[in-house]
Image (cartoon, rainbow, N blue to C red; front, side, top):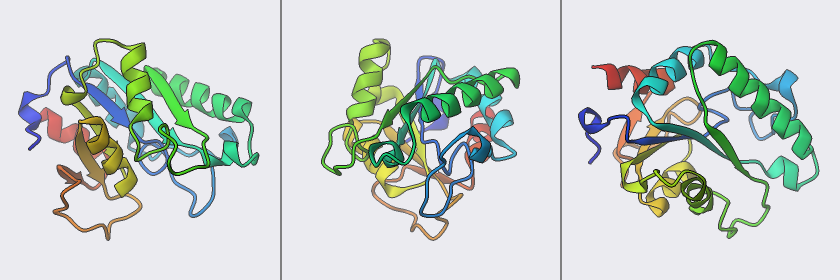
Length: 184
């Protein structure tokens, strides 16, 4: 079980994007920066989390790219602006990993652990046993379990998700509630 008191700056935080950092579009994609909307509490949450974690990375499934509905340049622009705005408010994201793969059995598509393994290759200090994924879908929780990390579910878009659940270690209403729990 995840004990928030044991988290120190040797830990890594993995974050899902849509529905955790920004408003999700129901059954659609965020196509460009003009459509991207942070939750009001995201800047504060990331500024708190930056003090508690050595690495903060985003792992996001982005089928819209794979389907040709948006370009990699559009996605890169969204992520560059997201990172820049969070830095301005004292937050930090060290790197964004995305899977544009359409096949659910792709190693890089959540719930499969490929993006976590990529992050571990890029940042060799990442210990997946001392890592947490925060997500708003059961596929995020499966990704965490498959990569050997702890899981935190935020009920921003799917509050009906049952808890307790064997895939979910902790549940919070949103990212800021999780961040504040680290301060207690």
